Image (cartoon, rainbow, N blue to C red; front, side, top):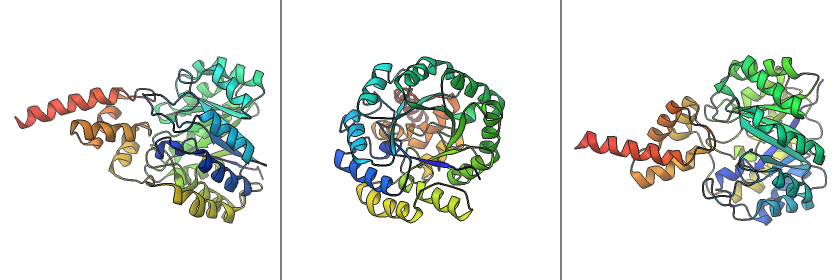
Length: 341
C-alpha cells in the first residue's frame, strides 16, 4: 500500500485565523506537539507566504523568518517548510528561508498561472529545497486544463503538485476527477497532493477521494484552523485514514488528537466555522483569505459581508486582490443608499 504523507499547515494557513499573530513561544509549542506526533512536514510562514506581512495582507506579530528558525530549532523529526506566492515573495526570500533552516518550499499560483512559478522552482531546486506546487482555486479549471498547468510546474522542477481547493468549493468527484487528471499527466515524474477546506464540509471527504485517485500527500491543520471555514482537520484526517487502513507512516493518531485539543485549542480565541460568510465562499468559489477582509469592509461601510463575498464571487476575483473588496463594499453601499432613498 502506498504511504500517504500528512503535511501540517497550522502555522501557515492557520495563521489567517489568528490574523498572523503567532508568537515564537506558540510556534515552538505547536511544532513540539506535531513533531512528537510524527508529522513529517510542517509549514511555517505568514498566511500569504514569505513576504506576506504587508499592509494589504496583514502584518505578522513576529517576523516569519524568526518563526521558521524557531520551528527548525524545535523539530527533531519533521521538516520545516515555507510557502511562497510569486509577486509576494521573492527568490531572495527563498534564500533567507533556506538560511534559517527551511527544507521544503511550496510555490503557489492561481491555477491558470503556473508559468509564473518557473523561476522560483528552478531557484528552489538549486538551493536544495524539496519542492511542492500549489494550484490555487483549482475549481476554476477543468481537470484536463488543470493537468496541463501541473505539467508546467513539474517541468520547472516541482516534485509534488497540489490540487488546492482554496474556497472549499469542490464536492467529491469535483476533487477526485481533478486529482486523477493530474496523476495521469505527471504520475511517474512527480507526486500529487491535495489541500482541502471545510466551507461546505467536504475537506476530509475530498481528501479521502484524492488519496483513492492517486494523491500521496494530504494537507491539514490542527482543529481545522485556517482561512474561511478552515482546513481539513489534520487529527480527523489521521483518524479516518488510520481507521480505513491507509498507511500514514509514523503518525501517532492519539498524539495528534491531543495536540489539537490540548495544545492548539487554548491558543485560539476564534475557531473557523461554517458560518454564513464562509458558506457563501464555498458556494461562490471565493478565495478563503478574503473572509476577514470582507468582514472588516462590512464593519466600515455597513454592507453585509456575505453580500460582498457574493459579489466578488460573481466577479471572479483571485488571491492578491484583497484591496478590491473595498471598491465592492463602496459600490454596494451606494446601491443600498439609493434603494432606501
